[in-house]
Amino acid sequence: MIPIYAISTGKIEDLDYGQKRQMLSALNKAPFSGKMWLSTLGFVEDEQAYKDHGGPHKAVCSFSKANYAMYKEDLTHLPDYAMFGENLTIEDLDESEVYFGNQYRLGEALIEVSEIREPCWKVQTKYGIPDLVKRMSSSGKTGFYFRVIKEGFVKEDDNLELVQLADADTRLSVQELNDIYYNDRKNLERLNYALQNPYLSPQRIEKLEKMRNVALKKRK
Image (cartoon, rainbow, N blue to C red; front, side, top):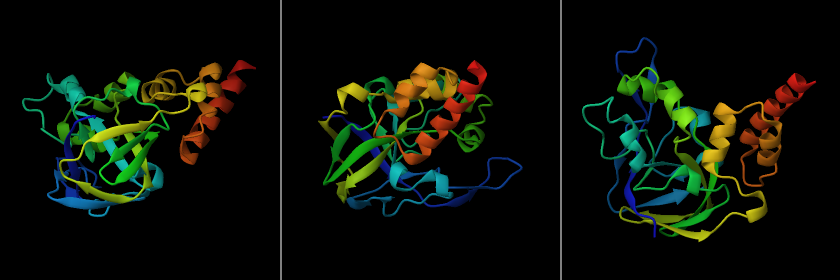
């Protein structure tokens, strides 16, 4: 069993953290009580402000609470949950131990690791840490997304149970893909290996193919 500290949802708000541009976001989430239906598009009471912040391949966002400590020197107080707007605040599940295609039981639902998270300017603005996006991206500790394989009710105190490991011959961790995507974008060997993975979203495949094309041109 993999302990979950909090399962949270949020509604879209017009947030003001002193920024010049408008910030519509459901970044500020809170744990729900009782149980909630988890559909292929996410928790029924959860919202996303933009089309790239959800969908079937980004139905459930997760982040490891253990990685909050990366920012303890920047903030006087670390949030208890949903620090980065995640639905699942997992106690300690490192990106290096999570593979695309891993399937987990969450209450009645079955979910599968499907996407990396690309941290955006909103979390950086909320906490006033100028290099937060760069630090999070380069570290590989971004959190990750699940798709929903089987819908069902999830209770507030449910935990994760690993039920299936991704295929060994194409196994790719969230940490490894983050390192390729953020730190090693011209490495053809690693890009080719990642593109063999059958569990990545169509959007991620498209981005990786563009990176590979650029790397091929530079090699010529």
